[in-house]
Length: 285
Image 1 (cartoon, rainbow, N blue to C red):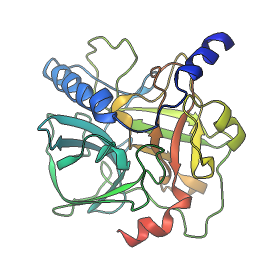
Image 2 (image 1 turned 120 degrees about the vertical axis):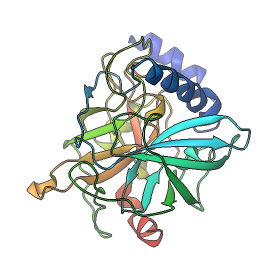
Image 3 (image 1 turned 180 degrees about the horizontal axis):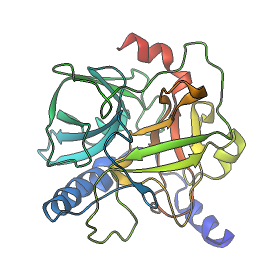
Image 4 (image 1 turned 90 degrees about the vertical axis):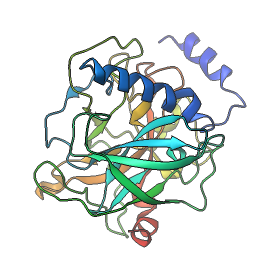
């Protein structure tokens, strides 16, 4: 993307809010698209990523949200205990639309054709603001605990006093979003993942299409014309697999800010920085 094109794109965003309208703009169309493609044995997933096999992302949750309007929307999330799923607050309330009920899919490569677990309750961070995406986190409680095994297990949360920024480390992002901005029918599975590098804070700020007012609680991974997170990946996990050789999948980010210009527009993806919210997460487990 040329500097002129980037400047024009950023100018168009002046005065726009960050999070308002996710469901109308992305979630509802993605729900329709994924459901139709599953019916034809096709897929929607992270752009430029690798097709996931069973057990590759055992913590990944697919979330189906029925809005009060009656429309169906989709997001991703992270299993953090056998009964709790962490996601983005805008998946439940985007400033315009609010959820009425939610169902979660775990341990599956497909979204609509898999067993769905009822969500008993949703806690949205009390400081969440859809217009700025401050505190863009929500915790979902499943009606019953899930089993765990090689195909399904919770991600680990950093320690409450962790100060590691994870700059320059390789991480893995996964979700149920589409494969590209021009996604055609594809006979692969729905779930997709991508290995990315965590950017330094200053790189993060200057490479985002929509810049948060407070970047201290946001982390980024680079975009490309070949890869990026897409629609239904919102709320999904950014993890460091086998962190420090422990075998644990360490959750460091929750997908929050995506480029309005598409999955492969070369802008960075923004994630809510988990280390800034460990106390809140623990209080809601």
